[in-house]
Amino acid sequence: MKCRINKKNCKVFLDFGKMPIANGFLKKREFKNEYFFPMKVGFNKSLSLFQLYKNPNPKKMFNKNYPFYTSSSKSMILHFKKYAQWIKKKLNKKSSILEIGSNDGTFLLNFKKYYHLGFEPSKSVHNVAIKNNVKSKNKFFNLKNIDFLIKKKIKFDVIVGSNVICHIPNQNDLIKSMNKLLKKRGEIIFEEPYLGSMYDKVSYDQIYDEHIFMFSATSINKIYKLHGLKLIDVLPQKTHGGSMRYVITKNTNAKITKRLKKIFIKEKKKNVDTLKGCYIFKKNVENSKKKLLKKLNEMKKKNLKICGYGATSKSTTILNYCKIGPDMIDLIFDTTKDKINKFSPGMHIPIRNYKYFAESNYKNIFLFAWNHKKEILKKEKYRKNCQWFSHLN
Ligand code: DWN
Image 1: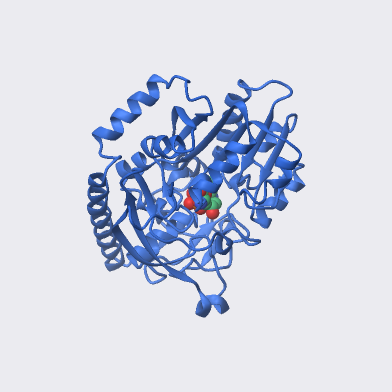
Image 2: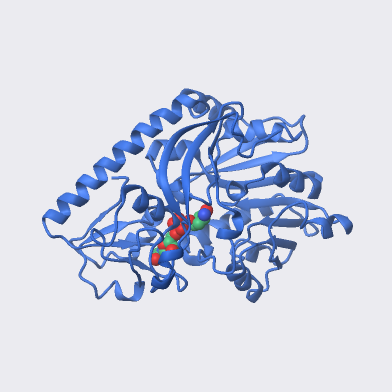
């Protein structure tokens, strides 16, 4: 089985052009050596799998400087707390849990009383987890790196991942690793940005180097079946602009939920499972680009000053695909220390400390962190007569 980049089966249908590392915020002196890769998107018909045609080596992205901290959003901390409560209903005192891509330990902090372990390849965020007394291995999760667990015959009741499964190029190695570490009655549970939501919102900014795959229930079902595992349930989530929680078991006789049956039908109806959906999306993406540039050009003609809010990974795709630079957007405010006083990847818009946002007089604000709109607008409600916008509206 090849559910990694399979050039034979992967039909390229969309080309975003040259893209930098989405989280590669950089200093001026680093501009000349900035890395770019051709970002093309394809669809594997046999697996109904939406994927990047080529992706950079994960070591280029997930390293000691990785600047995304899960705890940067209060609503995400709350989401992970609720998610943990939901999982705990499946556990007893002796249960064990493993998290892939455990970042700064935001999720595992809820499992300190249980035998827990996180795998996190990025040293920057792994260090925060360690500081918080979360057990974290600073390693990629793969067959080679789980050898010490196999030797000790350690298995887990639940293996979780959030916004990480789609980051892993070698899905075969990943699934084999999870399968080896999962107890007989255990469950694999993960949440990932959902292809159906991306199609509905035309949120093409979900596509960047880290997001090698954009999953659907149909694709997950097909991929895990090839490994003798079974998708039994899905739970739609509002996080990150529309995600899906998948529940997978070793028990191939287990019944699938009504909810999952309905999602399969919906995905068929909306062409999420075929190339047809890809071509509709492609048209929508091109129209979205035209609409956004028209809006920004009209604002510039009126001499309006524009700032960005939230230097997200997603913003790298919008800015580079639409060629929006500092001539259009003066700067982007962000709370992340590792991004502040650097420049956005590719288009080099300055990133400024969020603490200066309140005293700035920007009235036109591009909300790049549109997925945190509720949390952000609540925080900024003191700011009157502002136009908050994004490429989605
Ligand atoms: O899968 C991924 C998701 C979960 O997180 C990764 N590949 C990388 C990352 O994607 P992202 O950068 O698009 O995530 P966010 O959560 O949309 O990024 C929010 C950004 O906005 C951060 O840089 C923090 C910043 N922020 C802020 O300045 N003020 C966020 C909030 C909520 C705020 O109030």
